Length: 422
Image 1 (cartoon, rainbow, N blue to C red):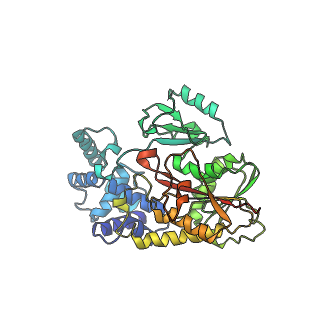
Image 2 (image 1 turned 135 degrees about the vertical axis):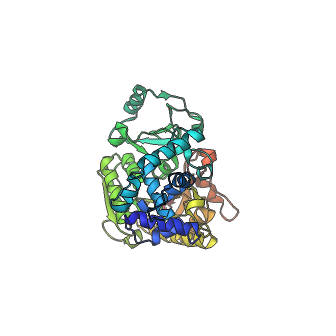
Image 3 (image 1 turned 30 degrees about the vertical axis):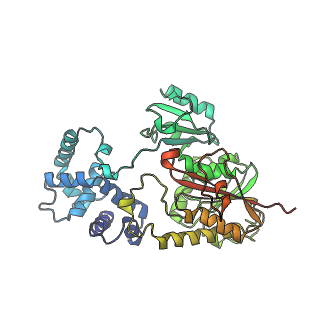
């Protein structure tokens, strides 16, 4: 019941332009911020439909609930998990179940749509849909067995081509990242046996690049500095064949708990996770000082993620110069700290941001302050390169991803290597 009350309060404040969903969710006292944020965002996606249903069913009459309470309750009953509480909220919804269901059916008939997702307002949809990427988890299976499995399931293998043009019930092998498969964006394999067994992992192509660029060999000692939710960590373990050591740090206990469950499902045995601020990890500590590889994917603006619904989730300050400057200063601080580990020979820095200040700007500043490292060309065959300038010609050694050009989320990757002592 508390969840619905807090979600309703946030919806009301958003309507009154008193803040963004992101900020208001974090500031709330509700313990599960991720659950709260998801409920509010999903309710907003269906808001126009829900408002029509509330009027049609006269849901507010005689109930003493607010419009915003009605919105989140109707959303969860019709499109979500079902009303997850007892008391008067559940009684109100269940007393109008038939009216709510009938109103939804009538709207779908009027709008000539078959699925609930088709009801989402056009202005809330991404401008286009990225294809679905699934990484084969080589810790538990192999590419040949997975390809044969999908063949038997009725999927058609097509030669590598334009990922965004793939059709339903087709799949292709990605030409850049080994063991990565591409499916039509509508493909849903969450209930598939391979997914449930951890043999395939949903992971966007851009998200696969940091571990692939770092490419630690079996036996390596790796630090994943900002690890949760863990897809990159499991990818590192696959590249290492579970042979070596990964220390995975994340400051968020809840996110780390979810990550641990995912790593267990994926068969990762070489990783030790710690709920700890990476900035407080001493690079002279004997447990970590032997690290030879570091993957650093710190907090960023997230401006490269396709379909973020920025207009719903962000306020006027989300991409302000002040916020981007604050983020880039934090990113530089973490990167400088990572480069202090005495045995590190390779480090990958990545963000899901499009802003030069968080990407090439941070990399240039780090190189200026750590002259024992240099940039190496990441994925030389990748066409979309970083921004080069007269002040920073090495920007082209970095790589960028763009949703429309590369059919992935917007991303940035830079590869640092320690200079030879000779």
